Image (tube, rainbow, N blue to C red):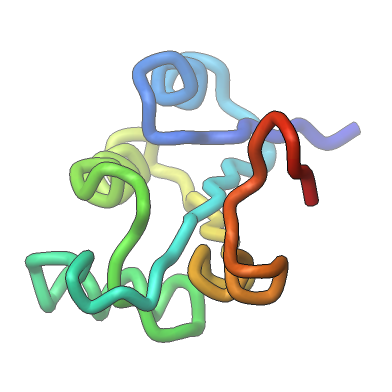
Amino acid sequence: MKTVNSLSGGKTSSYIAANYPADYNVFALVRTDDKNCIYPDAKVRQIVSDKIGKEFIGTTEQDNIIKIMLDLEQFIGSEIIWLTGVTFDDVVLKKGGWLPNVLHRY
């Protein structure tokens, strides 16, 4: 049986990763194409782009989550697998130009 830690960059999932080793540590990155949300550190942007195999401009999450995940990987001494799909902007555009809400779901 394989074990998986699903990481969010928050305190709880980081604690679990640090104290309860698993076969796989996985982080789902929510990306954006919006140039107004560009991640401020070009070197970190390149590191993230290399990890996900796609261009990384920025995230809709708090920027410090990226640094937390990179630091956590070093702290636990184990690879964190970064997953990402289409960007947040693409999801909104393909689903009609609006976000899901109480009245309208995807």
